[in-house]
Amino acid sequence: MRALTLRQPWAWAIIHAGKNVENRSWNTRIRGTVAIHAGMGLDGLEYLPRGVPRPRAGDLVRGALVGLVDIVDVVERSRSKWFFGPYGFVLRNPRPLWKPIPCKGKLGFWKVPPRIVRAIEAQGVRGTP
Image (tube, rainbow, N blue to C red; front, side, top):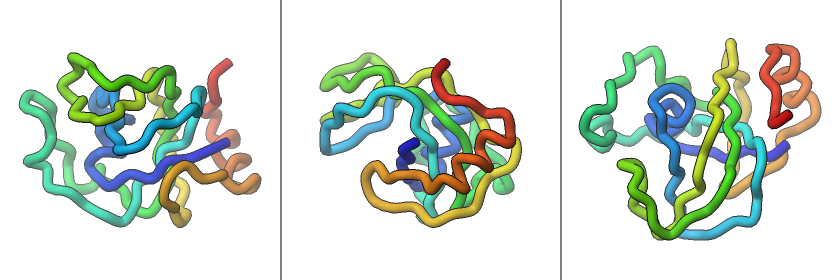
């Protein structure tokens, strides 16, 4: 399983607020289930699109895996309020972890260690069927 590290509140928005596009300056061929890792960085809540509910302070876990999501496409244009490009990873089927799993993140996509994959599976959260 691969993971992608994001600053908060973006990791929270993918799992809990309907963020259906992850913007990147680079493209990827990766499709399927990836783990979402909330990094230690924090952006201001004012950057969330208008109409998106603001998370409570305790909702912004940092330094942990917080859920799974499926990457189904990469686009260069989208009507999603979350898209600003130049590339947008199209996301579907967010699944929160019941309990965040602390671990260090990395740049780009990174391989989740087997012991952490087992911890995800122990929570009953699964990848694409």
